[in-house]
Amino acid sequence: MLWFLGSERGDITLTGTESGVRVVDGGGVGSIPPLLVLAAAFVVRVIPAAAYFFNPDEALHYLAASQGSLRLTYQAALTNAHPPLLILVLHFWQWLGHSELILRMPSVLAGTACCWLFFLWLAEVTNRTTAFTGLLLIAFAPSLIALSSEVRQYALLLFFIAACLLLSERALRSNSAWMMGLFSLALFGALLTHYSSLLLAVAIGVYVFARLVRHKTGRNVAVVWISGQIIAIAIAVYFLLTHVRRLKAMGMPQEIAETWLRRSIFHSAEHGITVFISVQTLRVFTYLFSHGLVGALIMLAFLVGMFALLTGRAKEDSPTPTRKELALLLSLPFLLNVGAAIVGIYPFGGTRHNALLAPFAMTGAAIGISFVLLERTWARSFWIRVSPVLAALVLCNLLPSPAPLIKARNHSKELMRDAVDHLRVATPPGSLIFSDYESGLLLGFYVCERGVVQIFPPLHRFAKADCGVHTTITARPDEWRFKADSLQSELNDAAASYNLAPATKVWLFDAGWINDLAPAISRGKDCSRPLFFGENILICELTVGRRIPATQRAATVSPAFSGAENVR
Image (cartoon, rainbow, N blue to C red; front, side):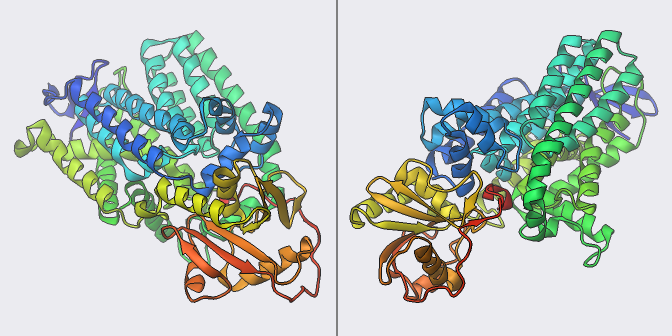
């Protein structure tokens, strides 16, 4: 059975045969191909970052980051379901500019840097051919390209994960307390970026402990690692007892588990554990590669890679991780995530919330691909070995399935610019602009150039705000988007809240991921003179009805979550 190990220079070594160690040539992976892939990874991220208008989540992150002081920014960050690091970074980053490209650049840079750190780590624990395969996977996986071209936490999280992997390996290999200290800082960064990093902290903690015991590492390295673990635990406990407890009190986790992430949480009455794990694991790979067939093939390669790691023989005195140590590292995040989904505390399936698993999934897949191809006489050429990977990546990028919620043709900044220009020209001064919460986020960013939706409690049923020469009325945070059958009722309730006379004309601005109003609007219901800018932006005129709600709702609602991003 074959096992791939590499020196610090990335030499390819195969061990584990009965006759001992055989050295095999690397197959032509020099320094130029990885650098070209890295440059291409940056380009495919920066193009959508420059071309697309914000989605509502991105506008929400910007709204939280654009508060007038660092204290308010931190408080706004805590209305979100994630730790505050990205929002705090954006608070200072926005001084460079407010265009979509500038605000997305931290994600673009972090996503690109993640690819390089991942390649360096994989070259140290396997070989350069396997590492190059892994680099292709992580650089061009469609989901990671998308996450790295948006104002989100995931690119920063993946950067810190790759940094943890590389720095821990170099600390253990060189017996360096300094490197171990940097590893701890990277772990802190992950914990301050996204709560899924708690799974990472446990997995890599077990892995590093196993390596420390086997290597009998120096005292200074062990002390630095233990100190870092104590601080990491303190960070996790602090946010669990403060931020997460507050989110639970507001009902956010329950809302998520019962709505759009329901499939990714185990329900014993609906399916068995084995079926749940199998289906959801396939959904993880399908999400990562945005294609059912490619996802299934990459998952098969991952399973082959795990088989290669768990069988055969390897030298136990190697400075690199043993087969079983690496298998432990790759499997633990999956096992922990599955366990969290079974007990109902974190999703596992086809969702961006499992982006944490990407480096581990792609490591196993790269090992599996190398295991299958390395010994084949027809695959001696390096480019023949990687050509199936390249073909699969081209397929899933050109023909994603399922398609993104906002298709590329409906996502261009020009469409949003046209909609904004029309709204400013067509609406007389003093007009009222009405929108749900997700649309209000975009309305504030693109039309009003200031936040017009609510963030901080107490949260009112509707919020009224100035927008240049106009006035906006936006729905409460948990009214994420209007439904066609309740649009007129929502408008009448808003009219009652602000004493709008019957027959008052109001302009509807509706934009975001899914336009539920479009079918009804197209049939001429409620909305007059509708204008569509692509399939995800709608502007039309509404009329306040004469019906007044029989029961006036309270002026305020309970402090429901305002981080609507976290339930979409």
